[in-house]
Image 1 (tube, rainbow, N blue to C red):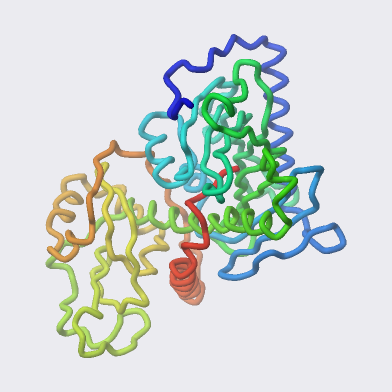
Image 2: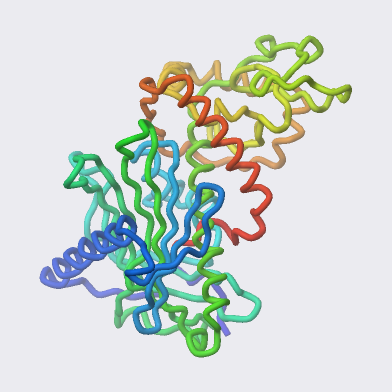
Length: 413
């Protein structure tokens, strides 16, 4: 049996006719709007929906099955902009693919671009439509075969008719292509199908700086799964995939931290003279290691109010300690980041203490990714900012405790 990845040019795809290209474009838009509808529709028992999960600001709903296809929708609110959310899914260049696989597509085994149908333009920079083949590791990889898909993918910006607010969707639907045959016999891949799955983000009308985020999963597992796997195991598999939506919130915050400057060592508050946490105001104990610097603002925090974040600066990934308030970010700090020179930021990284360098691990050098656009949170009140801080802290604490149950990263299909 042959192994992955497939060699370059494995799929020999003939040129599509203009009529076929137009048909795929229309189908892609229809799929995207169907996914948006599933993400935003009311989910009540009267319409066949039930609640699978309702904790940690994440809700997961199980919808009515269509034939052998299972339907599940996860929803939550995240801090960010549409540009920030869309940037997480960019995979159009080699460097973007590296970034995408490291974070969003950690379950990917292999992928190949087959056709490009719509390219981004100046007026619609967030739109793209492609046809691709992808192989992925399933949730229960020890008992089922790896899966592969032939997918029509549509990334598209849209406007809410009622409110006029903006939204963005990345939707996928399985299609059949003669040039992409079944690979079960040759590579041990079970062909799976989705009727319409993907991520949807739309701006909140009640909370400035927030997005509604949803992940729609509408897929047939393929093979013998539909006949042998009980509803309980299906629910568990879908729940694990949907819980990966929690990672989106963290990735948005890490991108925001990557765009802001670091403080220099001489700007750090002295630990010895810090009697209490800068955020929760609880007094420190006798153990010195309970005090930790935020390398973004320089203040001293307890471990409950500070987190390890995986950030990127000058193409280098590193783990840093930053408080939950800095993890939110605001327009002023990001404007300062945009105006700061590369030399000043590079020197601040190099001047971090030895204890910080020991936490960075083995950073891998890659090229600079797409710049992250700032979000305007200047209209928030002090109470709303405090809510953001508590929201971030509670999410990260709960997320760390349940990470093992969440599955391998953000599962796309």
